[in-house]
Image (cartoon, rainbow, N blue to C red; front, side, top):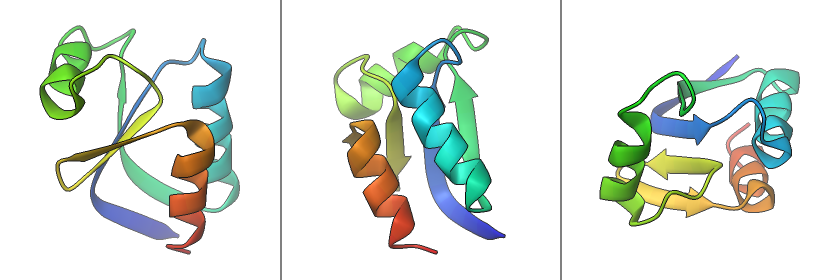
Length: 80
């Protein structure tokens, strides 16, 4: 199991791009903090404060926002 410290994934279970990232993490045994924007009302506000927009999925890496599911998966693939 790989744990990504200081990483937070903002996601929504109804978003196919988000689920692509979540599935990749699960399949490769990668753990990171996750905030479901449907269940956590403050998550979108926090996401906007970090990255300036409400786009998901978004992986926040030590305070820097990374968008696009393919970019997030590529980033994570380099960590395993």
